[in-house]
Amino acid sequence: MPEESKVSASEVIFHYFREKIKSGELKPGDPLPSERTLQKKLGVSRFSLREGLARLNAIGAIDTHHGKTTRVSQQVNMDSLKNVFLPMQAKSDTQSRGDLDEARVVLETEIAGLAAQRHTEKDLEGLRSNLHAAELALNEEDTFGSLDLEFHERIADAARNRFFNQMHAVIRDQLESVMKLHANAEEQRRLILKKNKDLFEAIEAGDARAARQLARDHLGVFKTHYTLAMATIIDLTHSVTPGDRGIEFEDSHLVDRDGWNARTWHLYSHSNTHMDAPKHFFNEGNTIDNTPLEVCIGLAWVIDLGMVEARQLHTVEDLGAYAEKIQKGDRILLKTGWERTFGSDEFRDGLPRISKELAEWFVEKGVSLIGVEPPSVADVNDLLEVTEIHQILLGANITIVESLKNLHLIKQDQVEFIALPLKLKDGDGSPVRALAIV
Image 1 (tube, helix red, strand yellow):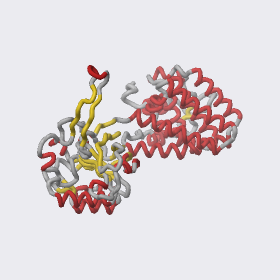
Image 2 (cartoon, one colour):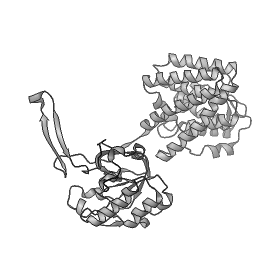
Image 3 (cartoon, helix red, strand yellow):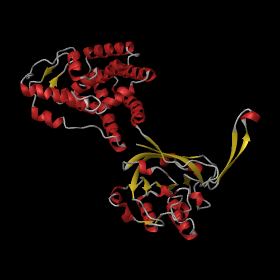
Image 4 (cartoon, one colour):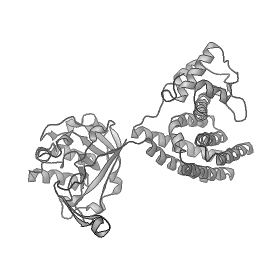
């Protein structure tokens, strides 16, 4: 039997049942072996088994009802099994995770509302029993995870909508591994239990509006934990290093002399990885402390322009197919490999630049942020050029982040990008800590 770490639980369970049905060992209407027997045969956890069975139930391969024997469906069809069980894992890229989050919000909030309107006393009894068992299992990670999954399955059953129930099961299958992580700390389990109890109370009271809102809030907590659990964080920031251009410090306090260490730093506002505000090239321009934070955080396109040459001008043509994808409000990171020259004279004196044509195109498209690897978007040794390109971009309130590093470590074409400046009153720019979450 394949190891669970290499083959998803759904695939393991599908292959098992496909062979059993195909060979005639399991026929329509036959009962399934007990959970304990299946766990042993398949080598999966109880949590993974229930998730896999939920998916089988969602496509009509088996009939599962709480408190009753699970059986092979009378209408089981091998062709439909083959089609539905094609790999459907949610991709690890940010866009796919976002799509899945949106689907869950739409589906699960409505399921909660319908459950509040359509539940029976039997549904409530099952939910009460589940919550009681979950409280007793707060110190048992795997058991609690299974009970949390069961809680939401029971709510889906209470909604009395067969299609919602089936879609719900398939979506939740995509989050199997993350749901385990979601319950991996006792503090997190207590929070989950509290939110489940609040949702149960709204359903019990028949308050559909409150149930929908509570389900939405619960998904918000899950999304945060999910993002952190699955994320790889790539630091895109050059260190603020004394001796680099515009960076100096002096020791103002020392442990041996004063009891603590503290330094007084002297920083050029555009040293190493930094952000430009319109004030940089306009006396009356917006200042760095007023840069909208929503621009500094969000999805960004990572456009690979290849290993560019010194003083190369970037044009719209260089964007290739991305030129059709870029929309108003988008953030753009240009990957050029120029980081390789950091620390040399060429890093500043031979930097690749954004052409006037491309700068005006970015303005026309309405992009909100541009990030580059060189220390500037234009030739720092040509006052006319550096002024013109900065004024085109900053004049349209396009935020500029310069001197990024490690873009070569990003393999996706979209990432969650964060670059937060210091809140320097009336500042023209600021060093930033830039990150990509992939």
